[in-house]
Image (cartoon, rainbow, N blue to C red; front, side, top):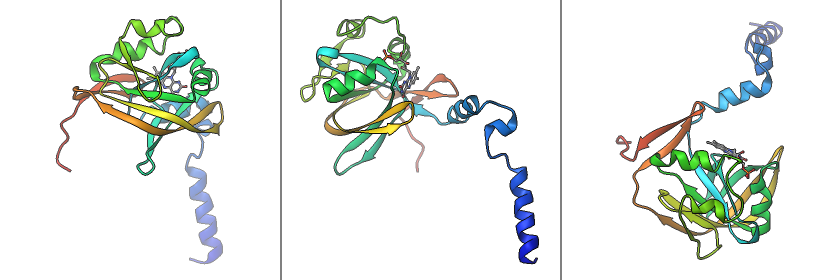
Amino acid sequence: MGHETEAAERAHVLKRVPTSSSRRGISAQSGLRQALGQFATGVTVLTAGGEDAHGMTANAFTSVSLEPPMVLCCVSKAARMHASIVTAGSFGVNILAAEQEDVSKYFADWRRPGGMAQFEAVGYTTGRKTGSPLLTGALAWLECELAEVLEGGDHSIFLGQVVATSRGTGEQALVFYGGGYHRIDGHARAA
Ligand SMILES: Cc1cc2nc3c(=O)[nH]c(=O)nc-3n(C[C@H](O)[C@H](O)[C@H](O)COP(=O)(O)O)c2cc1C
């Protein structure tokens, strides 16, 4: 095939490949939501202590680096949690267990009380390094110092240096997938 024919064939193929959700007649945002909903995640509650204490359900959380130990989470600029993390200069990450679906729903509900009162319904201890509330019954807890705030559109990307970790006794994770909650046990198939 000559160069010109090859280029024409490539262009033809590219035309058939939907490159944006709007081309499929779905709004770009709902297409993005639908596509991202196919990515299964764990569920966390981010917490901040101090004068502007707050907690918020978040699944936009990931590990970044082992050395130095770093994680990141993405928080909407419209969320009260955003200012709470900036004010505290630190945050806690509570990795939820399978039976904590109600905890996830609670910390995503704007009607919950403000300040430290919101944690009374769940139970918590105070993180020794950062003062972040650490929720009772979580699978694991991380305490992070806020290392950097990166621009991320309508969210901010909070990069955290992990200063303490602990592991609970639970073995079943809460999973968010396809817009709903699922449970997964900790027994992996052999790799
Ligand atoms: C499963 C789940 C995951 C969520 N993940 C995030 C997230 O990663 N970042 C975010 O900003 N909001 C996320 N939200 C939405 C917030 O939890 C919700 O908007 C919350 O009410 C904001 O609280 P605030 O404004 O009191 O801080 C999530 C909600 C649910 C149910």
